[in-house]
Structures are given as C-alpha cells and as structure tokens.
Length: 249
Image 1: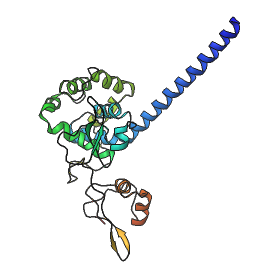
Image 2: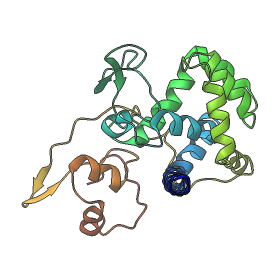
Image 3: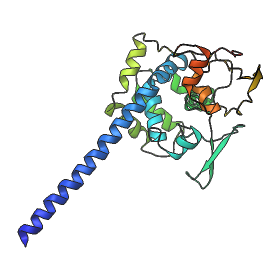
Image 4: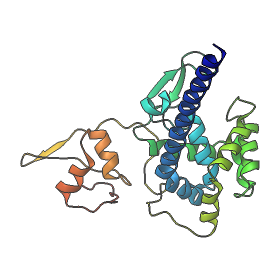
C-alpha cells in the first residue's frame, strides 16, 4: 500500500511539475513575442521622448500582462492609463475602485504614443527626465514616487522584468546610435492616442477608398476598416513597411 501510494505521489508530482513548467515556458515565449513586437516602438520613443526603452517595455508587459489583459484586448490600453479628462473613447473596469474609467485606443501603437505624451506633459513626472536614461532603477523608483501606480512593489516588479528579459539591452542600443526603421511619432501631425471614429469610405468609379492620416500604416488602416492588410498592399501596389502621408488615397 505504501509503495502504491509512493508511486502515485511521484507520478502526480511529475505531472503537475511538467504542467507548471509548460505553462511557464508558454508565458516566457509569449513575453518574448510581445517584446519583439514592440521593441522598435520603445527604442523610437527613447530617442524622441527620452523614456528608457527598458522602462517602457517593462511597464507595458506589467500593465497589460504582455497584451493579454482585458484592458489591452478590449481597449488597446497597454499602460493602464485612466481617463484623466480624456475626451475620446473609454473603457470601464474595476481597479483601485469599482468601474473606473480608462482610455481606449484604436490601435496599441497609439497607446504607446499616448503613454510617452502622458509622461512628458505632466509636471509630476518632469524630474524623471533629469535622470540618466541608462539608470532604469532610478526611473522605476521615480515612476512610483510620482504616483504612476499604487502598488508599493511597482519599482521592484519593473526592475525584475527588465533583468529577467534583458530589456536594458535596448537602452544600450539606442545610446549606441541604433535608429529603428519606423517613422517618428512626434511629427505625425495628430494627437496620438485618440480612438478615432471609423472613417466612412468614399467612391470613385465604384472603387472604394479612404484618405490616410499622417503616419498611418496599412496595418492600422486594416484594423479600423476590418479588412486584411494584405488587401491594402495588393490593391495599392505598395511595398511592405509603407507609412502613409496625410491625405494619401
């Protein structure tokens, strides 16, 4: 009986351990995919706004559960930014209090841009930009001091994410002169972040078209118009990676 129980215990432990390891491996892989998706945006914003890429990525991973949270999935809000006078689309969910108001975006990239503008346009965060951009520890503590999050462990959580996923390497790449091959967001000519109303298509000789906004990509337009980005590339005979100017048809 004891031998049977021992064998059962060992098998159960092995199965549970294997499941736990598989779950951890899946999570690690998903985080790696998330980092790969947004690393260039984070590095671009370090160049434009002065926010360390490591901090931006760590905040996005933490606040959005690497893009899996309800707020990220339903509102494209990857930084947990609440309304604070927001005049565009909103999303409500329980947080520190019940049914709190959060900003909603048309595309995750707008969330990244609005996060940068949020930090650079509010006085309580101004002292952060006097810090060494390579000192992510001071940045993490500074964000907490400025009241970005109520969790007292917020700095520790950010620092652990940066170390675990070696996010500091992106800061070093920027300081070494690396320039991501994407168009600067500060010169796009529109207030980054608003959840734009879906555009109404126009017609010319029964061909449907819309006017692009400055800095948009085929992927952004495809998400809004609920079509495949490949259709936009094919119908317009444009190359992958195209960025539109305002008024492009």
